[in-house]
Length: 130
Image (cartoon, rainbow, N blue to C red; front, side, top):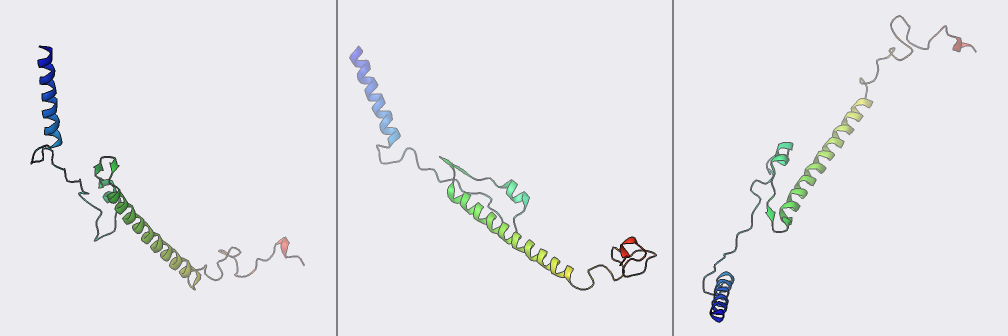
């Protein structure tokens, strides 16, 4: 009886192993298509906060798919570089516009001037002594 159970168990284990490994002509466990990034970052407009918050990267066997993560990081890096360049350009334009005429204090309204004072150097103080 012992030998009968042992032989039966070996036959069952061998049959299950062949079925899982695919010993026949048809595949028992077909390959699953890799999960792809469903909703990538928009290409037609700049990325905003809602796009980044809604982004969900697909998970692979050992974490996230490197290609998808690399694509997202490259895109976000390009967006940040473009925005930094635009900010620097606007700051430069603002600084350049502030140096031109019409943007400084009006003549006669400097720190020594004020209501009731004449434009020019302050007079009548003790610091005016020769």
